[in-house]
Length: 411
Image (tube, rainbow, N blue to C red; front, side, top):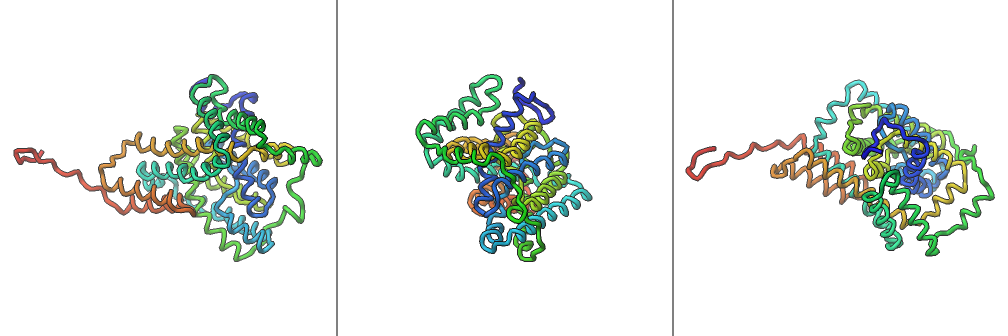
């Protein structure tokens, strides 16, 4: 097997299925956390993520190895309308509006092109933005690991050792194997609660969408639309950052091919479908980008497998229960590696582009992006990206000072 598996390559099912499952493990916790916090159905969220990812892959011509999961940007608004106001129909109307905003911006980009994106996001902006996408998430990873540091450290060590020293197929599934190893150790230590798993057999198959409960036709609610639609601009900027990361990791240019407009259309239509199913808006996931960075397996076929597995998981209670029983510290151990890898990818971007940090403009742009991206708790990546782009457009490069020799002559 080559050192890297490219986007267009298709591995045999015996390898693609475990690789897809590895992506499912990476996205599962965050995807089901959103519905738990907001009062929506976790099963519907899983179903929405699987179907949404398939829609995304179709519309991006299977050229963008990204998984779509529940977006955290809309938690506050969804909680207000679902839990507080007991009006899930209005919440789904807001989610529908989010998808419509994506589609409108897709139409604008389809008309005017996407080449301008690279002009306003050069390496001095792209590198720090990529770095903060990973680094801004590390506090979450460390918080998860802190639930049980010995378990987290063991899981992280297994992932790191397999990534460096494993041979053959084991080398490309280090995250999956580390989670399994961490789960076994946690079980031996009595840290895994198997009761929900046993109880899940009382109802093997669940129907995620139940008329009148989980399933709500979106309604036009002006307050919900105003609360959620503007947030689409935030997640669109975060999507742009993710595409920059993907481009750097996979040695491709998804912004140009298949085009960022197609990324927006795929994400927008996936969110529209989620709103009709009763699920939260979806977005591209940094966790899965981290898996690509660690494994160097970029095949979109594995993302197809992950989407199909997610749909199956949404139907079978025991499968959901097994994954839900994975201790938080185990996932914390692997996410430290995943998010850290994204951060170092951004630094690598700056090195490979040979960005000159002796130039004051570059130093200011990178400094402000890092400070805002890591320091702001709410949408820090989006604000840092906006400010970084603005600084790059406003600040002018200073000409290199003329050197004077000892003899007083200009060189």
